[in-house]
Length: 244
Image 1 (cartoon, rainbow, N blue to C red):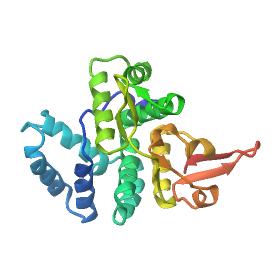
Image 2: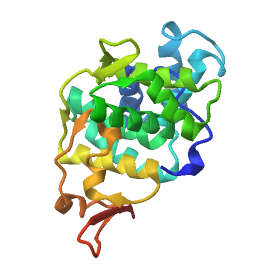
Image 3: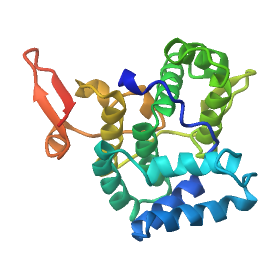
Image 4: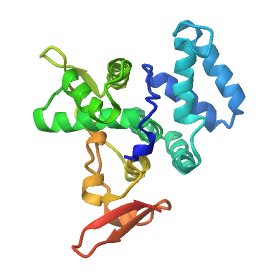
């Protein structure tokens, strides 16, 4: 991941999947950003307390808008593709589309997902204490760290990809991996590349631990056609993927 973006946590609220659907749907309808913000603000009135930008409601709106509404220029192509795919995606694939946008726009979420995925692969469960310890190594053991991690984990649980395990403080996968189409798999790997900010071997990219809820069957032939990713065969016959 690009180390230059590890200063601000950003994802510090629990976000419901329905709220992401509402934000994306309004973008799909090409509503003006100011109208989308007002609609989301009004929608959250009875769900999250507060009436100022610094309140829980205001912070929740900020997270939502940074995922779908006010994205950096380099993430704009991903958003355009994601909105297109979301228009016809079913419930499971909708989770994947939102996931691609969240990991691209929020490095903190990406790092939590990466550590959860690694721990699940090693132990079939992830303990909250292990996640916090690993996150503190790269983000610093700041006072807001644990609470922000909990918001990410609660969001993942609300989206149906994690639930509480039998051991205290443990988390396990909530379901079998979601099989995604090649088009949506491309969104996920594009999101990974944007969050990392540097290239990696194709074989590692499609099995990245941050994609633990999903099953990708993407191949190099398909990815070579991607407009914003470049795939090159290296001397050791490794296929290496970079941002174009």
